[in-house]
Image (tube, rainbow over all chains, first blue to last red; front, top):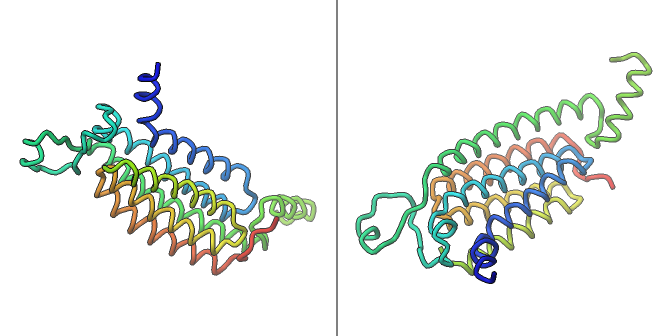
Length: 143
Length: 81
């Protein structure tokens, strides 16, 4: 039982922290009223998800489970390290998350541009005030 | 990978992430988001993902923070409530 906890819970601590940050970011995205704060929550959520996927490629810790005794090297060709028994990280999640980081920067840029347009039209970036303003506009027949 | 440094960085990550969402000053929140991205770059160095680390330091901590600052120059600085 103790061994099971060590192998499946304690040694996988980066997964637990990634899940915790995902929960925090997603909660902020849903609960926060301010649109910039919503975007900050979204970017934290995205980064935490990238942390989770890159941790899956962390072969030395998450698959061989030896409390970091199997220190891994970056995924480069390194003969001396291979002869000494070191392993290298799985590079596939790295490449996928590299694309993800660039896409998340692009989505943040577009979302911020939309926030600026919303501020120019409604004069506020708080969600409840925007909904109120929109109802006023509809009553006045502007939209 | 060194386990104590890794744990310390993940703890910092959690604290800075919560702080970025907790402060009412949006300028402070954006600066804390940049700090969060930079700590995340260090975590990726620990995970052996060097390419992801410097992309995160350039794009996440640099470009995203600059874009958010540019947006903040046109919207109110303080969060209500």
